[in-house]
Length: 424
Image (cartoon, rainbow, N blue to C red; front, side, top):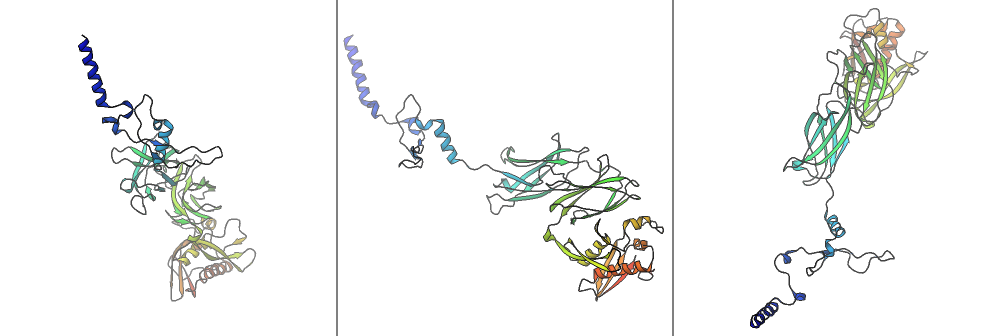
């Protein structure tokens, strides 16, 4: 028995010598594969100055195993190291439309990203108040270089809901791996009903997607007799400009006063019950997108002309634009007047013929060899006679056109006829 115990002791001693002392053990196996720990920068001294130790993260040698985790495994140390290694989050920005904007179809979208989405393409969705999808389109990001963020813009066509409600526009980036959303931006917008089926209201001015200036000229037909209607100009991201108008014989010809920021907007015509009869997308011009013209008006109580400068959207047909502006008449409330028939004159004219509209229109203006031939619609005949008024109509048209160097003489026609027009 004693011999057996002695043999066991000798075996234990041999095993201990083969493995070495515990204080000098070297890591083996899984222990050797542990990641290198990192130390935090030394804290500042009481005076607020850092100690002389290096402020960069530096690796330390692995320590011997113990029952407590190493200092580098503390939550603060790990969070600091991860934060130092993080990238900024992918961000999508929506610039247009602004929150609260009343939108129309097609809707103009624009914005930017700070990252390069998969195949440089984002997605855009428009939803109603219940989250139902109204439209979805791809949106291309125009980055200055591969791998960078950049601006994006697109047009989204959708069908308006039956009732006015809040909607949500979402622009997002989806994972190419599983389609999950990795980054998204949202903006709340105002959805209004589509024009009622069977509506006969015809908006003549402004034209679709026209560049317009303020004051804004509006003309339409198809109203119910002499009903009162509401006009609204809804600029993107700005308060609406609203005015009440009353139709006459189903026509409305008016000029909306006020100011509006430049950029995309929508013009609405609505009834008293709030139902929108027609809606049209327009763009309010910037000052750089306009140019001045001079319009000839009649001074009140006098027989002489007064030239007034007005800005119109920039166009190569500037003489046509000036003459069209003259036909709208002086600004409401102005002390200036016009001899040309106004909408009130045309609609109340006793000799009004079938097929006439509510105002005088310029059918065509041609300029050649110094001669400007201005051909007007039949409503010009609603001036009512009188040699003094006829003379003043001619003077207004001539003075407005003669401001242009290419015009030396003016010929006036009505519905293509030059003989027997504007007689007393």
